[in-house]
Length: 205
Image (cartoon, rainbow, N blue to C red; front, side):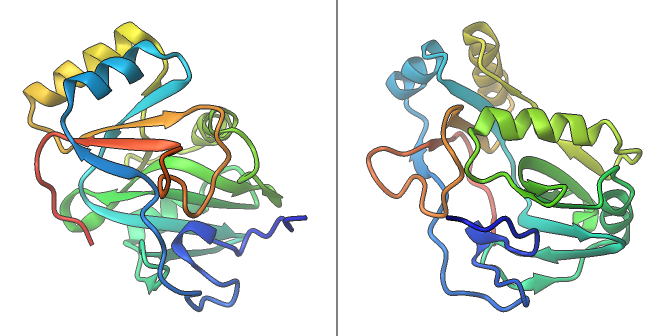
């Protein structure tokens, strides 16, 4: 049985003590823009859509007044003061946010998943449940330096999002299976729970 542990950042390979546990796999299949693939996932209500962001991958853990960050490889990183203050102000004793640091100097966190909150490990829950919980938590966010990545399962809204992001030459869009639990190697097989379509090259680390 998986033990709920707020200090665990599994997808980034973060050990409770802050050590990395080894290289992590990419969380999704990445592919170039493909009309056929887009059409299938736009039409299928099992797939949610979120904008694919640039910036740097960032996991942020709150434990009481302690707020710490990890990069996509599980290495501890310095957090900008605005992000740390914004997460510290959330109405929860503890949480683990997964997202991207964006903006000048990476001073804004855009969270796209909630892996743990209130002492509960949320990884086994379906993605949609985690996102609803994330929305509820973000209602207590009182800072422009912390927001969530909007998502939708409506075919019309997914199509509008695709068209808007393509026209803007944005980084891309990520389709995610709403029933999928979180897994460190999701997307590593043909049964990928995430599929990222790239519209324009982005710099990541």
